[in-house]
Image (cartoon, rainbow, N blue to C red; front, top):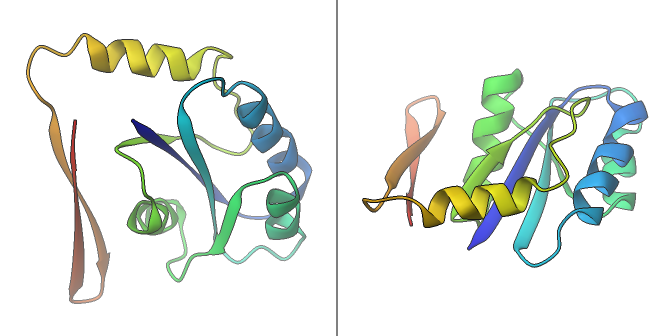
Length: 127
C-alpha cells in the first residue's frame, strides 16, 4: 500500500513544517508520500514544506478543492488521506488506515476526478 497524504495550503508557513515533521515522525512501516498543494502563498510555505521533506507544488487551481484535486492528480498512492496544515492526525493514523483496509469485505474501487476546464483526468484507485 502506498499512502498519499495531500495537504492544501495557503500562507501556512507557520504550520506546514510542523505538520509534515509530525507525519514523517509517525510513519513506521508504510510507504507514504506527503504532497503539499499550495494555492499561491505569499510567504515561505513551499520552502518550509520542502525542508520538512514533503513534495511541495504550486497548484494551477486555486481554492481548497482545486488544490486537493491537483494533489491527487500527481499522487502515486493507492490510498488518499487529506488533512489541513493546522491539523494533526492521531499518531497511529497509518496503522488505523491499514487496519480499516484489511477489514474490508469487498474490494474497494474509487474514481477521483481532477478537472481543468474541459479536460478531465481520471485516477482509478483499486485496493
